[in-house]
Image 1 (cartoon, helix red, strand yellow):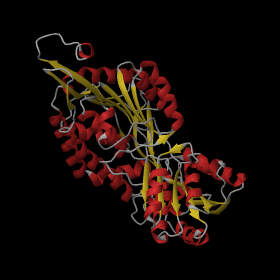
Image 2: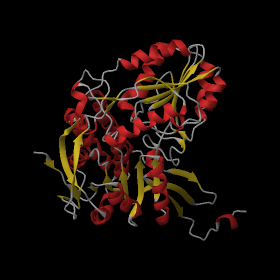
Image 3: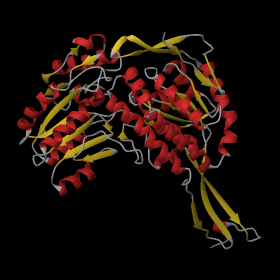
Length: 495
């Protein structure tokens, strides 16, 4: 019998006030129910927010190094439970075990990094323009943080957000994706086991309308961090503006890999296979455009197409498989719809373009790795985020044309160029409009201690990860200490 999971609100595991539940199923085998979860509403959110608000003062007054020490223990526990978590994650969202192990490891790396930042919440001490006066700034927490996360990295992305929020001294109301609630629940269990106090962390399960919107609109939520589509991000920004809360948006991408004529083609091939078809293309950093120099265009396609066709699709728990299913039937239908759009627009389908349902894949949402050529930059498959294993290939005659093409996008998350020319590489680093650029590497592969995010419609300027995320979760407070014993009127008296 499937496990009945609960919310964690105000220090207790509990059902929703609605009494309703929803199922979480395995996208590789839709007959398998992972568990059922509370289908919560705004009343559940309000209870969680009030609990987090009550816990805030004690938590913010806990020394930051002590908060960091608890997160270090979370890292130890994630290491201990890594294999079990990875297998649960594969069952509920589909990607292969090698990737879910990597997802957990990213959470582990983030825990250890965030723990050290508890001793590094630096401010500044600067000279005063007046005698016998001391000027400094410090980082202080903000309040209750609303955390809304996607399903494609159900451990890594929540840790990117929750760990720095907690180390900074904020309390948390967490809404995970409804497609991956089991992994999220396991994270909260581990946070509690490590010593995060009751009410400091709360998890409320449910959909975007019933749970996400109330979090964004709640007056006692002081900041919101969201990862998801650009369309939803814009709605969140609009709703959050009514209460002037701080918002971090990590949104879509239409990332491209450039392969120049001097590149190591075998290395570039490995990069595009991993970038385009890893996680079944369900990454905001996935390679969805491939820009090939005309001198190597035919040769590279002759290498790429059979390599894509030889990728093994199947249940991610089988370590021989390389590509898992799409997350659900709706996403499968969306991917197939874009394939039909591409064909109708005049692009040439060279491989894939259909559901894969042979053998053990018959009960899952598998889609063959798909490659289009003869793609024009104004086609929808060239401009819109598909979030599936669909790659559009372009031919260019020069480096400048490649840069112009890669920048011709409303998104600007990740980018890649393969070349042996150091001058060309540095020009690409300077000229590509993206938050991330890889030289001789695929468009995917973030590291926990580096900032992550993009430009244009990929986000609103904040970054996940690294040192910059702590700036989002804290306010700068400026302090002036005047020990002169007299009134000093700054610009009036010092000139």
